[in-house]
Length: 117
Image 1 (cartoon, rainbow, N blue to C red):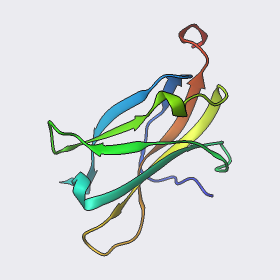
Image 2: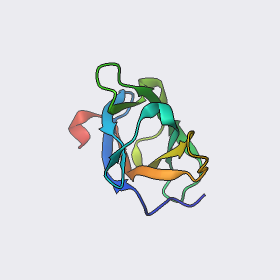
Image 3: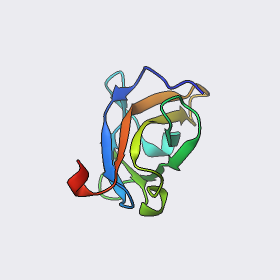
Image 4: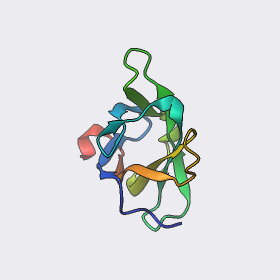
């Protein structure tokens, strides 16, 4: 698997065994995109793009339709502390364009404890 060089680069760090949760607005060429118009997938990989260690979960934000909630539950962050990469992609479900667009990508650091930062 080849990790993309497109999409917004955003480094992430999380403490091993904790939940990672954040929300994003999704725009293409300045135009707001909506959760219901896309299928999303995202994974944490070794730096060579092999062996996925965790999968992101995507939900529509119930308070703001412009936001997509992204999460990795604590049960998914119990793998070995270290440096990884992640990638989040979206595929349109409305325009027939089956190309997966990289939305976010970057380094993913899993640390053992807060004191080990």
